[in-house]
Length: 517
Image 1 (tube, rainbow, N blue to C red):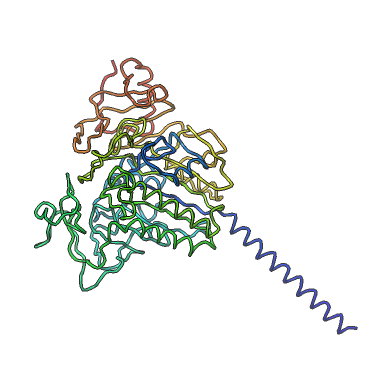
Image 2 (cartoon, helix red, strand yellow):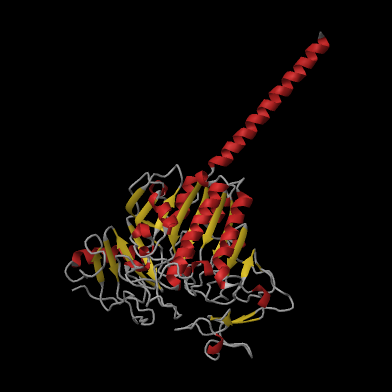
């Protein structure tokens, strides 16, 4: 009896231990599953009016529309800047780009402008057990400014929070025209080293200026240096032939990397920053999409980008993680048609209005420069909603932190997670937006643009930049197209707006100090 009793006790203890282990494993799985994956899909130069859900009728974007129509579609969603590098800096750091003087459009050889000690979205998520990845356009600088492209390039994305990175250094129209995976150029032949220079060409290398007979795409302005794949670029490059990308395959390549990332990391909470290259120049759609829009290459790459979004969503669904993934879709700034190449973007525009109901576009302080498509989608968690609340991409850092139970916050980044989930109508009260180092200010429905010294003119892109020798004051609720400047007729509101603007922005020398008479 004693032996049986001992065996019974051992057996009971064994069962109890197995039960505890089973419960622990089950709880770990539950904990793991309840941490939502986060995906930010970031388009490049996509305008408010380029998407069907935002009013486009001449171009079809069914997959982006699906996200918009089944999530929260923001009508007052802003990038922080009307150009790419500053917006990307603000998105990842939650900090106004004008606080960092280096946050301007960068050459391909620029050093990293995010301090490696600075908080970023991926860094914050890593504190809560997330795996983090970036696929696509970077354009925030690499290395220290003296980059040897033939060795491991650091610091870069991997030093500011990303576990995995598969990127292009800057933009599709800038050298070096190679993919970089975790700091190493993909497919580089050590016997054919890469050399890059943004000031002078290498002896014997053809350029867009000197060798127009080699071009498959003609340059219009500013894109006439080294020729890669028949396309003249910004900057000079020599070597690295085996590593050079094929432009018309870029969308497929980045999509594959994004899909592979999801497949590899689906068993753990992940964050993917999927930075599309479309519809930035040079617009080089896959042959499958040539002619798909009837608007030339710019329209075709928007159709291609929409397809990419659809294929990526299918992957999330197939890998059974769609219902546990918060997707944010937005764009780094507003639209531009002629941005350096003759590609029929203007001639074939037809009735399409990339800027939507607004004035301006890329590079502009007017609304079309920074008011962009902004969508949050989470299957089963977010109900279809249209929100007029004021939000900015900077707010994602603090908002996502609150979602996953992190105490990390950044001062410029507001916690608007309830708004992003469609559970609140309350957004920002005020926001400073930026364009090529100049800033403007929105508070409520009111918007001011200060007068700046040394007015900037850019007739080449044919976009109203918002520059004036006088203050501009607009009521966006009554005048969405910013046609009626109320600065002279509503001086009380103007003075109030200037005071609120300066309380955040501070004094800066380039604003003309005009007496408000």
